[in-house]
Every structure is written in C-alpha cells, then in structure tokens.
Amino acid sequence: MVQDARQRTKVWLETYLRNSQLTKDNGSRQASFIVAFDEPDYPIIKVFKTKGVDLIFSIGTPNSTPIVSGDQVVRRYEEHVPFEWSCINKVGIAGTKLRWKATAEVRYVGENYPTGSQRVVIDERPNDKNLGSTPLFSQKATMIYKRDTT
Amino acid sequence: MDPAYWGTMRWGYFRWGSFRDDWDSILAVFEDVASRDVTRRKLVLGDTRDSTTGWYPKSFTEDTVEGILIPKTSSHLALKAGTYVRTDGLLLTAAGFDEGDEVKDAVGNYWEIKAVREVRNGNSFSHRECDLTFLPLHELV
Image 1 (tube, rainbow over the protein chains, first blue to last red):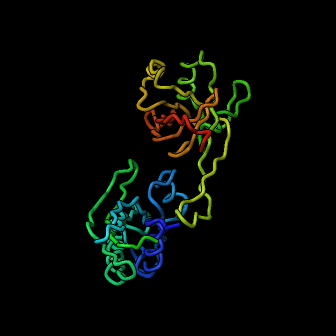
Image 2 (spheres, each protein chain N blue to C red):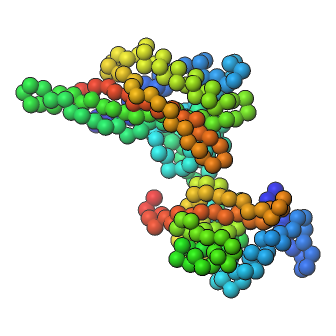
Image 3 (spheres, rainbow over the protein chains, first blue to last red):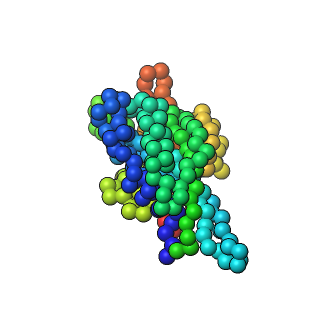
C-alpha cells in the first residue's frame, strides 16, 4: 500500500529536526516536542498540560494532484501537505520564543534536506489562537513534494 | 482538594471541611429533577503513542458525581439557575471537569465537555458550568 503523505512528512521531520536547537528560554535545557497527525480526538491543551510536551508539530491532510505524462499515464503525484507547530507559555518557556526556534528549525530542515522527494516548504504564516485560558503560539506552512505512484 | 469532595462528607447537620452553600442553593432549585447524579468520565492519555499517527491512546476513568445536566431542549431549566445553554447541553456541577472529559447521563447518553467555566460568588467557589456536545455515535467509537 502507498504510504500516507502525512506519514512520510512525519518521518522526515522526526529524522531531521535537531533536539539541540529546540530549547527552553535558557538555551540549554531541551524543550520536549512531538510530531503527530493533525486533529487528534482529544483537546491539544491536554497534551501540553498532562504529557510534559512543550512543542507540537502537527501534520494536516494533504491535497494531491496527479502528474500525467505525455502518454496520458499518471506517473507521479504532487502532494501539498499542510503542517503547523504550536506551543504555549510555560515556566521557563516563552511561547513566542519557542515558536521562532521551531520556525528556524523547519527552515533549516527544508533548506538542507530537500532531496529524496524534492521537498519545498512554502507559505509560512502565523496561526495564533486563543484557547481561553492561554494563547496558543502557532505557525503553519505547506510542504510540497512529488512522489511516484508507489 | 475540590471543595465538592469535602462538601459531600456530611454527618447529619454537621459537615466536614469547607461548605458548599452556593452549590447547595443551586441544587435546591433542581430538587424536582429526577436524577442529580451523572457519571463523570475523566479523559486520560496513555504513554505509548501510535507509531503512524503519533497520537496518544485515550482511556477514561469513571465515577459518579453530583451534577445537573440540562439539554438545549430544556433551556428553561437553565434560566432557573440564572444561566443559559450555549451548546447541545449544559452541566452544572461542583465536581472537577476538564475539556475532553465525558459525561454519561441517567439514561445512558454520552456528552463531551467542550468548555468549563467556574462560577464564583465573590471569592467563594460556587460551581462549574460545562458546555456539552451530544455524542450520538458514542457506541461506535
């Protein structure tokens, strides 16, 4: 079975994100982060409150476009995978600072590991939300990559 | 410790710990409601994340707590407590609830907690108002 584009993106991020760069405010203690599919069936705030997670990279459902060759056969797919990274203010963590560290790290991964599937990260933009009791500092982007049919 | 816990430990007219006069006055308003107990289902996230989705496994711990569940169709009841029903239903309770927790009512329907607001009289805790979403397909998931 063809692998889910979200799964490929999750593995790509988990492989290349550098723990050493995603740190708390003091710059030495590492922030805890996870990479997961978007829209879990529980509130995201529960993860921040009960699982000791400081930063979440979440991957949305992609749009896909078939790429048809001259002989009218689908040879590849272009996947547009939305993903975002989110954090909140915690003791020792200013959410807005950690969000920027994560943004810089996503750029680093996009700039340095585009090969394999010719990945490009585009359309990076802020996506802050108010969760009522706390602001959610969030940034989102779309990753484009081409894959073959297998 | 939740004040409601101590409030329920009574010996006759004597009560242990903190008092719940504000909450008791709310309960008194609903004296004629058939059931003033609901099943609280506290959401617990497990430790081992799914290898594909990265999600935490969900489970629930159940206990019975005092609470008045008012469906949207019975909004007039909420007015008696000086509030209104914003979503599918409203739960008035002194027990602790968080977003994502569930409630099972006396007839076996399931509801999900979408928001929790504490009601206070001055500095004194009275009760919580929880916005609920009805889960008609709960048995399937």
